[in-house]
Image 1 (cartoon, helix red, strand yellow):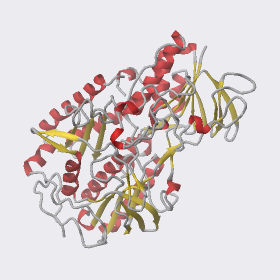
Image 2 (tube, chains in turn brown, red):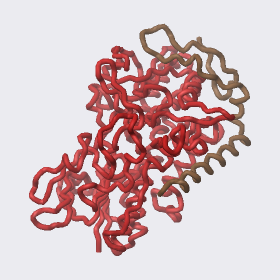
Image 3 (cartoon, chains in turn blue, orange):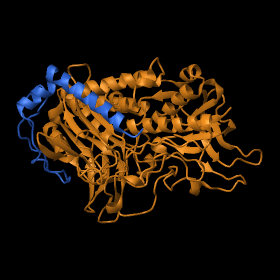
Image 4 (cartoon, helix red, strand yellow):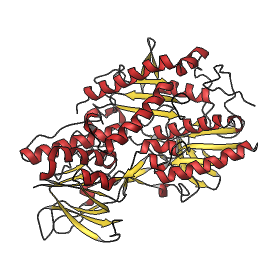
Length: 68
Length: 484
């Protein structure tokens, strides 16, 4: 059984992406996996509150910068 | 007194109607023609499609809103435009056929001084045999489609819980589809549901897309700046897919869907068959079929509309290679080149070309994402055209048109999964501008505003946008302060 990474399981493991079949599945083995610390940051309420504020500020900046 | 007719009550048409009502008051007539009696916040159909939301949370009836705003509503579909009038009058007219209000099947000719075509897409499931709810796959394009998708997903999860492995395919049902962001969001949600149900290990989840590379999203991909380095949306998306154990099949044109099997061709010209237990495949879009006639009744459809059925506006439709595409090719005012009182916004306007590099398979099959023009850009176009029309009604037809090019406006795409404030997650992207401009920015876009983030904050943003945009669409106090 393949290991599964979830936000609550901050221990990403190498998993086989291409089961043996004829499908031309993209090779994603070179894509970086998040570290346990990154996974925790993605769910951390204080950190995400600040990201929420930054994201909204960015949307407002885009609205103001657009020529409309 | 001027009469404005708006065809369509989606994001762009409804936004235009609300702003025109606000700007023109009761001195002028605003009429919205839509075959649907309800407004649908389509981005949240994704949550309906996994059973996290009910239909009633994403739709509401239009007529009471329009009654409050002094907008006339016709539940009807537009059949033909007569921009030069007819034998009875020189004023432009639209032929409509009622679909409700107790007049289903009856026809009427509406006169207008200004016309906005905001008819949105025709869902062209028929371009791929077996595609869609009438065939062998599901869709989340409408709230009812999403309900059916959720029911089928529930069945698959039940089968998985019984210990039988299942293959789930999510993606694009044709080589020329658009809205890759919606399929990306849905696959992210399906993964979340499978994990919550404790059956992810038994499920094979495949993202089948016409994008040549992950992270293309029909906008030619993006460059992000992160911790002092430039990285690509391709790597960012691949990381998410690898982490979530979602497999990706790229550069695919779905040829047909049979019960439990999807047949597709890839860019290398090879043909493949993929067995599935659940398939959510989006359809390609075309323009809503509308005919156009001149004053003498001659058919001028091919003058006003592109072969795709989308209306020609002030874009540069000169055929040229990808290397010569420029932001200036994109329309700014959305006015018809043949009729200055006719506009097309949202999905209804004909784009000058794709945004992503177009590709053909080794067999010559076109596998090229169409340009997205939904959500934020659609709303901005609706408001911009409303401002132009209001100015021209108040100050005369020579009043300058307002402008809003997709080469100058930004957009946000939030792929959010989960429910509640603490258990969700999201991959959230912003891009500025939508159409890359390599003359202004070395990477095509402003690196300060073009970002990708993964985390709970994006989920909050999506929840906030859901409530804000429904509040705005209902025209509640202060709605106009909420940006498009």
